[in-house]
Length: 221
Length: 221
Image (cartoon, rainbow over all chains, first blue to last red; front, side):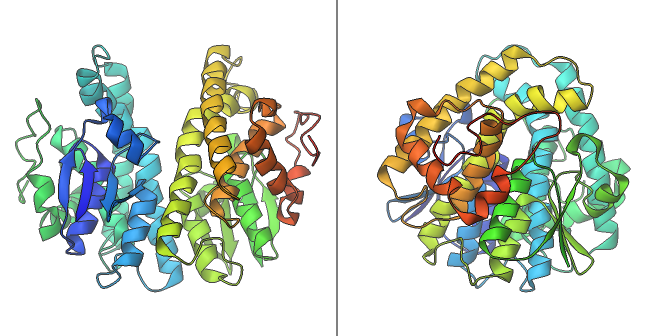
């Protein structure tokens, strides 16, 4: 049995769920709250991050290790191009979203609006949220720029880069903080990703105590 | 010609330099200050991070994209194991150092002690440095624990995981902030890495205006 320890607010959990869906691998989800991880989860992953991928009693943790492992273990549905230069471009964009977007946008907004609420961290700091929203505008501009020039973010084909980007953006969109109207090409790109069967689960996500933005699950938004 | 745009204080630049040395690839270094990146560097890498790998007039940026590219382009000296589960364990540890150590230790210490100095960011904040040093103790304990059980951090063979860890730790060691004496196995591991020909350049590194700790380049420290 393949088990994914995850949480709907965790962008990296979403990334791995979409990969598993794209690769048509069957898996069971177990929810853990990132702000109150169980001892068992810590034993599976001493770094204390989500998601954790468990199969045959073995655990793989870390978004980078899991996504590369799945690409190697299940190559029939490739999510990286064959050409090594195109692979590099795809991975460059994965890192852009996994690292840059995550630290400049995701953590600013989601720590304040969600994590603090459940971990008794106090009231959300509007100043920090605003920094995140300002950075978001810059990132949306970049997505818009890429989407105007390319079919998908890294090139002609759908790839890990689209998954990495949509995983992060979808959590911010759940909170209603993505100003889609200013970014026509980014919006068209995101509607293509939203329409994929692999994304269906993500659109049904429910973060306890926080309703999704009205348009969150709409394919036409 | 292969060019690496780098800086001696950039852990990710060090990581790629060690990989290139291990793979015996010839390359030219060009130094750029991370706190005052040139327009040309931004054109090569819009994310504004170092290092940037340039070959045949093409640029690859991002530590993840460059290291996986080099592994694919130059497989004769493999830095990832063959077995996909061992590859996953190696990448898990790369992410541990590239992401967790970098944000919990490196940025706290190096931003305050080095970046602020050159970017007119004001006086170093001792409170932030102390958070970094406390986190460092936890990370050294983990390296010590791994090194007690394994020949190298990810298993029997030298791998990308050792390079990722040593790249981060070597910058902190340059600043004299690694309390080696409390971590016997970690120290033995680091002395093995220090002795590799691929690490020679790193031990000659010089960060402008900051002298390395006395023991920095000593193989017996």
